[in-house]
Amino acid sequence: MKKTISELDKKHYELIRKNVSEFLFFCNKKYVETNPGTVLDIAPQDHEGAKSYFTASKVKILDIDPNSNADYIVDLCENNSKVIKNNIFDWIVCTEVIEHVKNPFKAVQEMHRILKKGGMIFATTPFNFRIHGPLPDCWRFTKYGLEELFKKFDKIIIEELETDDRWLMPIHYTIRVIK
Image (cartoon, rainbow, N blue to C red; front, side, top):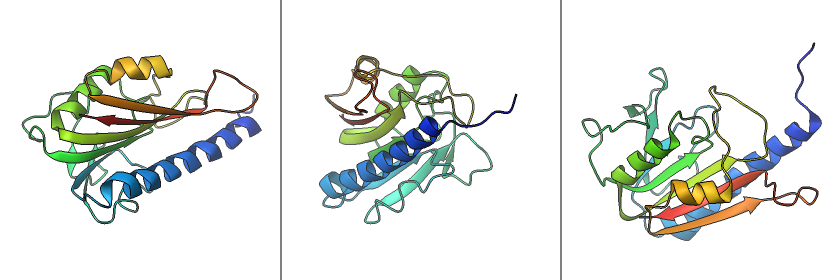
């Protein structure tokens, strides 16, 4: 059987990429541009990443891939305090990553550890979208699951990218959390 990507999945992919781009542009304009600091971009891989959006800030990259040339080659699901100190990042960008980690609760705990008090995480994750690379693709979160995942933060703002034909089945979420 020939494996092809459906037209719906292609459409959803385009909507997700547009949503991520608009979200990062918005986050830079609303929060970071007027208050530059150090941004940690987690596993940008094949996409443009945070550097093109957060030009007024210093951007560091974290990735698990030893061939990525990232500033930090670590597993986000572990305590990396020997490599990354506590409370050092003003902003963390984590787009299209938490569905790929093996333990999202530990990953969010690690982000909480390295984020400064008053800092923010800008995250995105798909919901109604096909399994995709890089594998493994382990999770899909509802709004309620995301609230549970980020519950240790002081404020959580979750927005849904919905389609007209599937009520309560958003394609994608954007998440802003404040420590």
